[in-house]
Length: 216
Image (cartoon, rainbow, N blue to C red; front, side):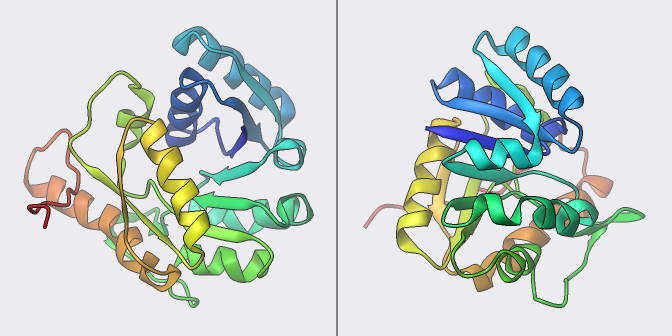
Protein backbone atom coordinates (compact mmCIF):
# COMPACT_ATOMS: atom_id res chain seq x y z
CA UNK A 1 0.00 0.00 0.00
CA UNK A 2 1.25 3.47 -0.84
CA UNK A 3 0.84 5.95 2.02
CA UNK A 4 1.51 9.68 1.76
CA UNK A 5 2.06 11.54 5.04
CA UNK A 6 1.48 15.22 4.35
CA UNK A 7 3.36 17.23 6.92
CA UNK A 8 5.60 14.25 7.46
CA UNK A 9 8.49 16.51 8.37
CA UNK A 10 6.69 17.35 11.64
CA UNK A 11 6.93 15.24 14.77
CA UNK A 12 3.75 13.15 14.57
CA UNK A 13 3.88 12.65 10.80
CA UNK A 14 7.58 11.78 10.84
CA UNK A 15 6.94 9.14 13.50
CA UNK A 16 3.99 7.59 11.72
CA UNK A 17 5.97 7.44 8.48
CA UNK A 18 8.72 5.45 10.21
CA UNK A 19 6.26 3.11 11.89
CA UNK A 20 4.48 2.26 8.64
CA UNK A 21 7.72 1.90 6.71
CA UNK A 22 8.96 -0.60 9.29
CA UNK A 23 5.71 -2.50 8.86
CA UNK A 24 6.44 -2.90 5.14
CA UNK A 25 4.31 -0.14 3.63
CA UNK A 26 5.47 2.10 0.78
CA UNK A 27 5.63 5.46 2.57
CA UNK A 28 6.27 8.95 1.20
CA UNK A 29 6.77 11.99 3.41
CA UNK A 30 5.18 15.08 1.92
CA UNK A 31 6.01 18.74 2.51
CA UNK A 32 5.34 22.08 0.84
CA UNK A 33 8.99 21.99 -0.29
CA UNK A 34 10.12 18.79 -2.00
CA UNK A 35 13.72 19.22 -0.83
CA UNK A 36 12.60 19.41 2.80
CA UNK A 37 10.57 16.22 2.37
CA UNK A 38 13.49 14.40 0.74
CA UNK A 39 15.81 15.39 3.59
CA UNK A 40 13.29 14.21 6.18
CA UNK A 41 12.81 10.94 4.30
CA UNK A 42 16.56 10.30 4.33
CA UNK A 43 16.63 10.92 8.09
CA UNK A 44 13.64 8.63 8.64
CA UNK A 45 15.24 5.89 6.55
CA UNK A 46 18.43 6.10 8.61
CA UNK A 47 16.54 6.03 11.90
CA UNK A 48 14.10 3.21 11.25
CA UNK A 49 16.07 1.02 8.86
CA UNK A 50 13.32 0.95 6.22
CA UNK A 51 13.06 3.03 3.06
CA UNK A 52 10.99 6.22 3.26
CA UNK A 53 10.52 8.47 0.22
CA UNK A 54 10.09 12.24 0.05
CA UNK A 55 8.15 14.51 -2.33
CA UNK A 56 6.13 17.70 -2.51
CA UNK A 57 2.69 17.30 -0.92
CA UNK A 58 0.76 17.26 -4.18
CA UNK A 59 3.04 14.69 -5.81
CA UNK A 60 3.01 12.49 -2.71
CA UNK A 61 -0.79 12.60 -2.51
CA UNK A 62 -1.26 11.88 -6.23
CA UNK A 63 0.84 8.69 -6.05
CA UNK A 64 -0.71 7.38 -2.82
CA UNK A 65 -3.56 4.99 -2.06
CA UNK A 66 -4.02 6.50 1.41
CA UNK A 67 -3.26 10.09 2.40
CA UNK A 68 -2.53 11.14 5.99
CA UNK A 69 -2.66 14.79 7.08
CA UNK A 70 -0.34 15.73 9.95
CA UNK A 71 0.05 19.49 9.72
CA UNK A 72 -0.70 22.26 12.23
CA UNK A 73 -4.34 23.36 12.11
CA UNK A 74 -3.42 26.76 10.71
CA UNK A 75 -1.82 25.03 7.69
CA UNK A 76 -4.74 22.69 7.03
CA UNK A 77 -6.81 24.79 4.61
CA UNK A 78 -3.84 25.69 2.43
CA UNK A 79 -2.58 22.11 2.30
CA UNK A 80 -6.02 20.76 1.39
CA UNK A 81 -6.39 23.33 -1.37
CA UNK A 82 -3.06 22.21 -2.80
CA UNK A 83 -3.88 18.49 -2.83
CA UNK A 84 -7.65 18.70 -3.42
CA UNK A 85 -7.65 17.12 -6.87
CA UNK A 86 -4.97 14.54 -5.97
CA UNK A 87 -6.96 12.98 -3.10
CA UNK A 88 -10.35 12.52 -4.76
CA UNK A 89 -11.75 9.02 -4.24
CA UNK A 90 -9.14 8.14 -1.63
CA UNK A 91 -9.04 7.38 2.08
CA UNK A 92 -7.91 10.55 3.83
CA UNK A 93 -6.83 10.24 7.48
CA UNK A 94 -6.43 13.43 9.47
CA UNK A 95 -4.42 13.70 12.68
CA UNK A 96 -4.93 17.47 12.91
CA UNK A 97 -5.87 19.11 16.21
CA UNK A 98 -7.42 22.60 16.22
CA UNK A 99 -5.51 24.34 19.00
CA UNK A 100 -4.70 27.96 19.72
CA UNK A 101 -0.89 28.24 19.38
CA UNK A 102 -0.89 30.81 22.18
CA UNK A 103 -2.94 28.62 24.53
CA UNK A 104 -2.36 24.98 23.64
CA UNK A 105 -4.16 23.75 26.76
CA UNK A 106 -7.45 25.42 25.74
CA UNK A 107 -9.63 23.62 23.17
CA UNK A 108 -11.12 25.58 20.27
CA UNK A 109 -13.89 24.61 17.86
CA UNK A 110 -13.85 25.51 14.16
CA UNK A 111 -17.18 26.73 12.72
CA UNK A 112 -17.79 23.30 11.17
CA UNK A 113 -17.51 21.67 14.61
CA UNK A 114 -14.08 20.07 14.17
CA UNK A 115 -10.98 20.23 12.01
CA UNK A 116 -12.01 16.85 10.59
CA UNK A 117 -15.44 18.07 9.49
CA UNK A 118 -13.81 21.17 8.05
CA UNK A 119 -11.51 18.92 6.00
CA UNK A 120 -14.43 16.82 4.77
CA UNK A 121 -16.32 19.91 3.68
CA UNK A 122 -13.31 21.32 1.83
CA UNK A 123 -12.38 18.07 0.08
CA UNK A 124 -15.92 17.02 -0.84
CA UNK A 125 -18.02 13.89 -0.56
CA UNK A 126 -15.83 11.80 -2.89
CA UNK A 127 -13.06 11.76 -0.27
CA UNK A 128 -13.48 9.42 2.71
CA UNK A 129 -12.19 11.50 5.61
CA UNK A 130 -11.42 9.75 8.91
CA UNK A 131 -10.02 11.19 12.15
CA UNK A 132 -7.28 9.25 13.97
CA UNK A 133 -4.07 9.71 16.02
CA UNK A 134 -5.23 12.97 17.66
CA UNK A 135 -4.41 11.67 21.16
CA UNK A 136 -1.00 10.14 20.37
CA UNK A 137 1.85 12.30 21.74
CA UNK A 138 4.33 13.21 19.01
CA UNK A 139 7.33 11.77 20.86
CA UNK A 140 5.50 8.44 21.16
CA UNK A 141 5.06 8.31 17.40
CA UNK A 142 8.75 9.10 16.84
CA UNK A 143 9.91 6.51 19.37
CA UNK A 144 8.67 3.70 17.14
CA UNK A 145 9.90 0.95 19.49
CA UNK A 146 8.04 2.39 22.46
CA UNK A 147 4.96 0.61 23.81
CA UNK A 148 2.16 3.11 24.42
CA UNK A 149 -0.60 2.61 26.96
CA UNK A 150 -3.06 4.96 25.26
CA UNK A 151 -5.53 4.09 22.52
CA UNK A 152 -6.37 5.70 19.18
CA UNK A 153 -9.98 6.77 18.63
CA UNK A 154 -11.22 6.61 15.04
CA UNK A 155 -14.13 8.73 13.77
CA UNK A 156 -15.70 8.66 10.32
CA UNK A 157 -18.95 8.29 8.40
CA UNK A 158 -17.83 5.45 6.11
CA UNK A 159 -17.60 2.03 7.79
CA UNK A 160 -15.09 0.58 5.32
CA UNK A 161 -12.86 3.65 5.59
CA UNK A 162 -12.86 3.36 9.38
CA UNK A 163 -11.94 -0.31 9.23
CA UNK A 164 -9.05 0.42 6.86
CA UNK A 165 -7.92 3.17 9.21
CA UNK A 166 -8.14 0.90 12.25
CA UNK A 167 -5.94 -1.63 10.46
CA UNK A 168 -3.34 1.07 9.73
CA UNK A 169 -3.48 2.29 13.33
CA UNK A 170 -2.75 -1.21 14.58
CA UNK A 171 -0.05 -1.70 11.96
CA UNK A 172 1.61 1.42 13.39
CA UNK A 173 1.67 -0.29 16.79
CA UNK A 174 -1.38 1.19 18.53
CA UNK A 175 -4.74 -0.16 19.67
CA UNK A 176 -7.68 1.33 17.75
CA UNK A 177 -11.33 1.85 18.63
CA UNK A 178 -14.22 2.92 16.42
CA UNK A 179 -15.46 6.10 18.10
CA UNK A 180 -18.45 6.72 15.87
CA UNK A 181 -19.29 9.21 13.12
CA UNK A 182 -17.36 12.20 11.89
CA UNK A 183 -19.52 14.41 14.10
CA UNK A 184 -17.77 12.88 17.14
CA UNK A 185 -14.36 14.10 16.00
CA UNK A 186 -14.68 17.34 17.96
CA UNK A 187 -14.60 15.32 21.18
CA UNK A 188 -11.44 13.46 20.18
CA UNK A 189 -9.73 16.60 18.91
CA UNK A 190 -10.47 18.35 22.19
CA UNK A 191 -8.69 15.66 24.16
CA UNK A 192 -5.26 16.98 23.14
CA UNK A 193 -5.90 20.31 24.85
CA UNK A 194 -7.38 18.45 27.79
CA UNK A 195 -4.23 16.35 28.10
CA UNK A 196 -2.03 19.44 27.99
CA UNK A 197 -4.16 21.09 30.66
CA UNK A 198 -3.71 18.02 32.87
CA UNK A 199 0.05 18.01 32.27
CA UNK A 200 0.29 21.63 33.38
CA UNK A 201 -0.67 20.45 36.87
CA UNK A 202 0.37 16.79 36.91
CA UNK A 203 3.87 15.82 35.62
CA UNK A 204 2.86 12.85 33.48
CA UNK A 205 5.33 12.02 30.73
CA UNK A 206 3.24 9.57 28.68
CA UNK A 207 -0.25 10.90 29.23
CA UNK A 208 -2.80 9.19 27.03
CA UNK A 209 -6.41 8.06 26.93
CA UNK A 210 -7.35 4.41 27.14
CA UNK A 211 -10.61 2.53 26.65
CA UNK A 212 -11.22 0.18 29.57
CA UNK A 213 -13.80 -2.49 30.21
CA UNK A 214 -14.41 -6.21 30.24
CA UNK A 215 -15.38 -7.92 26.95
CA UNK A 216 -19.02 -9.04 26.92
